[in-house]
Image (cartoon, rainbow, N blue to C red; front, side, top):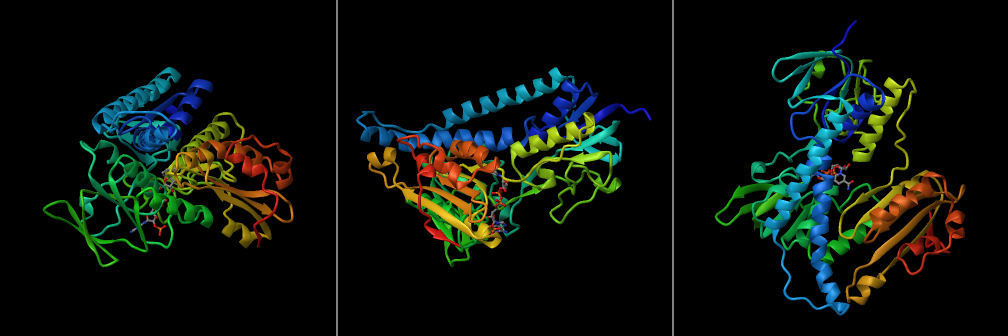
Length: 452
Ligand code: NDP
């Protein structure tokens, strides 16, 4: 059978663009891609990239004060949101243009419209045109969801946070996950009076308890008003802002409310029911280890499959798909031991198991130290950092590494290589410390603080 394309990709985010580019550019496939919004997807347009630039912007707040402690003299410092926002959006426009060019240069035909599936080999664009393809790749990502409470519409999500005309004076952030905790640090740093409500006992559920505890403590010390075991009941528009009634019996007024209560896969209205592609309870597309759905010609990668929702993982899944389908080299994606960073302030870099998960699995030793690092301690701050290793008693392998410190994201990338190679505690011990650094503690901890 003759198809219009070898591959039709739905979604121009990190995963979809990579798969389309490599399939067309390196493998000579005839490829088309449809994107209804901006090219670059969540990561580039409304996620990792603008978020990280906002982290940088917010971190300068403390730097001016610290520099004074080191002898520098400045006049008054202040933050100009309008100036920053203009530059931020110009940067996003620049990056989007790069993504468009990547596709153009690789010979991928693009359609700036929504696409839906008609059958196992046919896609229909919003203008009604139908295109056939030997393979279809769904890379539509996900979107934030609001909790569904009275007055929900008054709250914003992470999609809108980059677009404030002026910075609010106060904000309530609801949720205790990555997005809630990262934006609590950012907005607090930018001078917004920041309150965070999280319904559970400690933020960042699922991560190492000791790390979560320290991050929360430091966030509070930085001025964020964190309320654990608390969430909203309803929101109303009041005379001076949004009135929020909470489970702790209070009603408080905030200029803005950020609902960071999770994300769901973008599968609604995709026409999956026409094809036999299976979905899970969250609406995620069910795929095998090669990212293939129940329909052999249809594959899915990235957040729409709700496996590990991180940009570099989506990119790998895209590369694995191309390798499998266009190079005849079946390549499953390895989802084990993925290093990752949460850009809270302080940052959290982590790989492998938390202490709590590891001790359920086998007998372990814990090496952990928490201290005031030289740079901020000299500036008179009380900030503490954490360096922690979870070690298997039997194999001596590092099962988990947890770093809470400025630059932890950079550190865990490198630790990740050693851990992925199967490094043991003794391999760490044989490595000479780089002095004076914070991370040297990772190779100098001699005695376990506990065993379990
Ligand atoms: P998460 O699922 O991580 O967090 C959602 C939070 O909202 C949880 O604390 C959850 O509580 C809470 N919540 C959920 N429903 C309700 C409700 N009805 N009422 C009150 N609270 C509620 O989602 P995020 O949106 O923060 O992040 C989504 C994903 O995006 C992450 O899992 C990650 O994969 C990715 N991401 C990665 C980043 C990075 O790598 N640095 C940065 C940002 C996002 P509970 O814990 O009790 O369920």
